[in-house]
Image 1 (cartoon, rainbow, N blue to C red):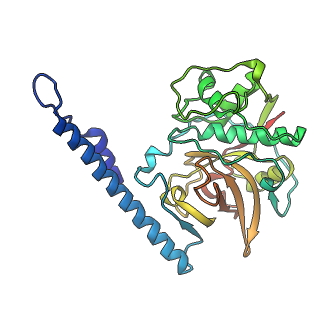
Image 2: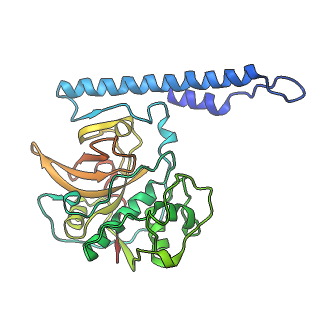
Length: 312
């Protein structure tokens, strides 16, 4: 149904009132009504998926709940934008800890909202740098995602159309970043770059990738370094409408990375280990803007497929 509706929305014939190319008020009204009907159908289908999942949760068959949110009338392809391939660099770690939660240690800024812009890569990047600045200075500064969206295209990023976080880090290595206060977020990628190096509050020397698919190396890095930039296969209704619990999507593909988030810790509940990720969809999504995802050593949803961190 989603694919069919998307086809209708994008490929429907244009209504022309006359040879003079004037569009009648009826045509405009009909297009608006048709769009409303199609979005309602998408919303109803998503509502059905959510209700089925939650029924399974209350029957003890699903480990997490889902809830309707602002993405209810959108197809998933309108939310998730594919990221681009980039070469990887690796470095190993050897230490681990039982429970880590950087939200309780001052490393993490408030939950942010990327809006209807595929800029998750920018939020995942700034979040890790914010954590490292706090670790070094004791000061928590909210960094500008818009600075990255507007100014890093020459490094291989694509604004609201997605990017790999390594390319964003390349920009910061060579330029620096302003704070959100001096370069606020606008959720668009059509404005020019306003970066002023005199107002930069963040600089990094380099960044490092973790071994692909290695959850133990990822856990070691979280325990010893701080919040980590990661990518996930989030192209599932269960992720889009996640509400609470320990997320475990059996259809996840660790090679189908579609969304960037910030890994801020891990823990355990009822014998089930989990990762703690910070999303950039506002605090009304998930558990106050966060998700607990199953940590089972199987690289669930590709959480360890593309993980990296900055070096100040």
